[in-house]
Amino acid sequence: MTNSDRPNRNVNLRIDLASIRHNLTCARKLAPDSKIIATVKADAYGHGMINVLSALQDADAFAVATMEEGVALRRSGASKPIMVLQGFRTESNLYECVTLDLWPVIHARYQLEIITKQKLASLSCWVKFDTGMGRVGLRCENAQSIHRRLTASSVNVVGIMSHLANASHIEDLSNDRQLREFSAIRWPDAVDRSLANSAALISRRDMHFDWVRPGIMLYGASPLESSDAASLGLQPAMRATAPVIAIREFKRGQRIGYGGRYQCSQDTKAAIVGAGYGDGYPRSVPDGTAVMLGNQRCPIIGQVSMDSMVVDISSLTVPPPIDYPVTLWGHSQLPVDEIAALAGTISYEPLCAIRGQRHWIDASSNLNVRKIVKDLSTH
Ligand SMILES: *Cc1c(COP(=O)(O)O)cnc(C)c1O
Image 1 (cartoon, rainbow, N blue to C red):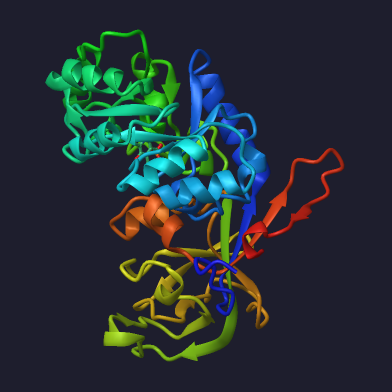
Image 2: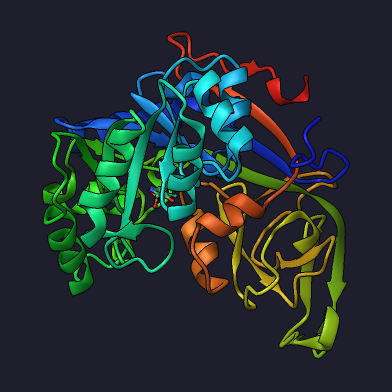
């Protein structure tokens, strides 16, 4: 059992591989002339890196953040190229890149030094430049000297890349500045180029280059501030549910939960749902944030607790039975983007944070039979 699972808690995460496959097809259609690096870092944004691989068979490569993720992905049997976004930190990491055939991203000078010292044959890597993200990356004006050093160490540079700081705001002028900087990098050899994350893949054809690197869109959440996932044709891959643990009736005027933030303006029927911030559901959501009981939206009232939340079900004609699964997000009418926005964050954060029992299904089979996929991460 991986420790990212939390099997002793109530949250149930149903992950639909068919949706991920569909979203990858969307990416393919939007960037038909580019190769696709499917980004599966942070356990595939909470969807289970190893378990979603079968849905990403059509990708040309994978991207992970850490060396450890890269090693785990290769050892799981993935045969496509694996880009390690943080690259190697140590000499033994570099050795692993060679023996496991990983593509480290060289983004800092200390990595050049490790390479020079090691004199390893047959390393393939990417070189990352900082065109304005202000995080990792080498300086664009040093491209030629970096190239010289890598050539002297007989390293195979697959491509050069950069990352956008404001791609979710397509109208932000910094995107154009970064594109100009990136295009102006003078790399003496003909190598591949890669700039686009999901947002740029969807909204900026001129940023596609040779390889696109979608992440969030594969999981069916919107990378753009201005569009929702459904209007982009994306399907949510994760549905998070938690059971009803009690039905309560509160009198008008009664306060609900820690701090008594919410006060009932009338007699209120409530369902107590057995999930909270201890499961990774954001505590910061305001009163009125929706959950779904069947196809009915019902509002959360009061602060979300560690293990539970209170939901106003006064609008329901019949109260749900105990143990009824309440959808926290991932219903077609309750996208994770909505919850994230109300919590003052982006979908990436709750998707990565939520914990529970994960089930992988594949709703695409011809017979429309839902196949339960074995949890490979427990072995
Ligand atoms: C996470 C990441 C991506 C994927 O970004 P999305 O917004 O999820 O599409 C691409 N490139 C780099 C360098 C990243 O860190």
